[in-house]
Structure formats: C-alpha cells, structure tokens
Length: 399
Ligand code: SF4
Image (tube, rainbow, N blue to C red; front, side, top):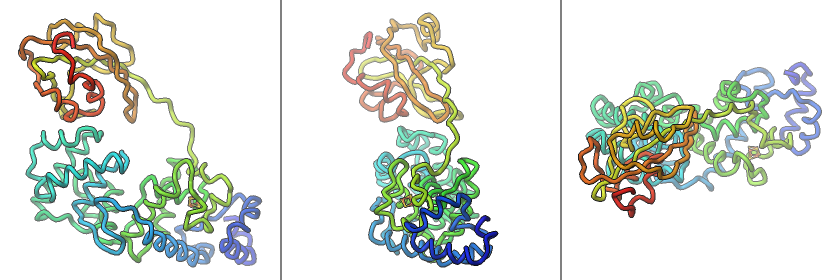
C-alpha cells in the first residue's frame, strides 16, 4: 500500500531493489509497510512483480529438479505419481513426520497395493495396521474412502479437486495435493511447510492463524501453471529441507534473493504467532491384566478419541488424579491389583498422566480381548504401547 501511494518512481525503484535483496535490506528496514511480492490482487504493483514471481517459479523448479526428496510415494520430477499412493501418504502425513509415516506407508502398500485391495480389508486389520499413527478417525475415513473409490469410481481416484473433496477424510488441502501431485492439475497446495515459506518470503506480519487466508492467497498467486505437481512438491521440500522452522538455511535457499523475511534479518520469527494457550492436563488409570502370556484388551467405542482401537481397559480421563481406592473400584475385574508406574502422553488438546495398575489372572475369565503379549503393543495406539512395554517378560501374577 505504501509503495502504491508513493508513485511510479518508487515502484520502479522497488523492482530494482527486489533484483538485489541485499541492497534492499537497508531500505526495507526504513519502510516497514511492505506490499507483498506475491499479492494475489492484480494491482499495478502486483503487475510490476509478475516478473519476480516468474523468476521465483523458475528458480524453485530448477532447485527441485536437482534436490527433490526421494520418497516411496513420489515419482521423480517430471513424471506422474500413483494417485492411490499419493492419497495414502497425504492422509498418513497429516499429523506426523515423513520418518514416522514411511514404515506404515510401506507396510500398507505391501499388504494393500491398490485402493481395491484396501476396500476389501477387515476394519480391525486396518485399525491394527494404523496403530501408532494416531488420529484414528483418519483410519476409519481411510477405509470408507477406499470403499467409495472401489465401488463408485471403479477403483480409480477422481482427477479433479471438487470430486476428490467429496471423498471421506479428503479436505481442501488433501484434494489440492492429490489433484496437483497425482494428476498435474493446477491447484494451490498449502500445508504447514508452504505457509512458513510464504510467510517468510513476504514477511507477513499478521499472526497465525489469522494470516492463513492471506498466505493462501499469496500461495495461489505464486502457484505455477507449468508443472503444478512438481511445484507443489518443490514448495513442500523447500519448507522441509531448507526453510526449516527453527534454523532456515538461507545461504542454500534458491529464493534467498527474493525473500523479505531474510531481508528483515529475523526470518525465523515468521510466521508470526500469538502466545500459545496452556494445554490442559488430565489423569486416568489403565489396567494391565495378564494370563498365560496374553494381556486383556478392550475395543474402545467407535467414536471419540482413539475410537475403535484396541486398548487397555481404563477409567475416564479427568482433571483430578485418581486415588488408590477409586482406581481399584473402577478395575475391570477383581484381582490383586498393584500400582505399576505411570505413562505420560501428549494429545493435541490435552496431556495425560495414565497410572498403570497390573495384576495376573489364573484364567482368562474376564470379558476381555486376550492378546499375545508380543503382539499387543503393535496392535494398540502408542499411549497403550508405552504402558505395555517391558511387560513381555513379566510374570503373569502381580506383573
Ligand atoms: S531465504 Fe531463508 S527464510 Fe527466505 S524462503 Fe529461503 S530459507 Fe526461507
């Protein structure tokens, strides 16, 4: 805005400055109101920056051709990926890292190599294979989505964003990512990595999450109509490998000369954030009953946190710690229950201290799902896997 008001001489000056951001940094230090390079509005200023956007696109795609991450769901730059593998990876990566998701992706695609195969899987098998990835509603949606693709789309994912968004568990981001990466359709793909790159490139002062729409608009203005799939993955890779959250590697960045965040000297402070709210803390008790090398599990109710997953029996999770008397009164079956430590776990919206009570049983009479100890940890979410760890060699009684 300030630049638009300042007249043509200064606009021309700014174009020159953008060509050499090192020189610009001193100037930008004096003028704190900056029209973003990637403004979605086609104002005269934005038009004058069209060549800058073209240079950014070219620089990033050249960098991507040489530096793209090799990932099991990826096709090499310039080639088309399998939509099923793109979809599966995007669902798995929604709340976890590439390193954590990769073994799950490999196991899923070995066992269910196509959407049609996954569609015929048993719910319990998919939930067990998902155990440890968290956010279990996604596993239920995964299965529902595979079944719709198999039945309504002859086993092939639709190739446009609108149809993809009709599928269970496929939101705006995932639909855009599949459309761009698997079908090379122009789409604006904005994940956390892309938000960070765009916020820094433009030195966006609006704090998150209020800045999301502004950043999405900027990302859309910058999106490449040429090689949309590679463009989307290049932005993700730049955010993951170079424009890292804490220590951006600006000297290695192909966009360094265009970056207003870098010019400000405080690039790691973008995106701006308001102070985080304190996460509430809760307490619960879990019961580990063992018998003849097996442990008694339950299946949690289908809806809600960890819904449908195998788990140790627990109390409710509440703000106040459970006394011993309360914990014993809630036990799933009478036994010689003993306190056996605690597990700490952090969910998105709260943290949890889970006290473990353990006992051995003479016979598997209790109405529990008796599961071999060496399989139980892998079949349960990580909260319960932590509670089961170390139990495989424990004696049944008093274990
Ligand atoms: S120059 Fe630095 S802050 Fe700017 S986009 Fe590149 S890595 Fe991120």
